[in-house]
Length: 154
Image (cartoon, rainbow, N blue to C red):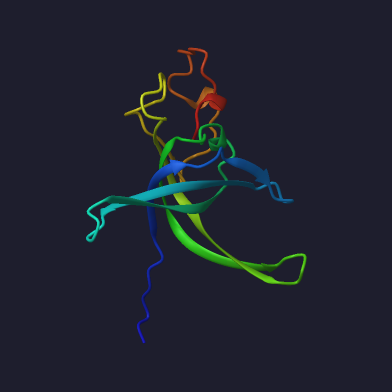
């Protein structure tokens, strides 16, 4: 039996809805969103192009400021792992949910051609990034241009 295993997911797709951030009773931020990925192929018998879309539920821990940027239609890169959990619904039936637990998120752009959509200027949200820094600790602290830590998504 092999002692090694890999659980890694890489997705590039478009957000199906705006991200929602909630907090656990311990105060930890949990951001959830869905991503649509599509594939196209040519049907061998009819010669027609066909398309299939898959939806992926994504969970991102400890990134409370990122939800403001994860808006419906935006293109996003997500890297993480698959996790399946289960619970019993109100009728006592066991329900299984498989979701991507994100470790890295990159915002790739907006809804094709929208002004100010950020095309070509990815914003990164790696899990290991520092969340907030004091303005006085920055070497450019004397060059305040009206941008605060709240304006930075990571």
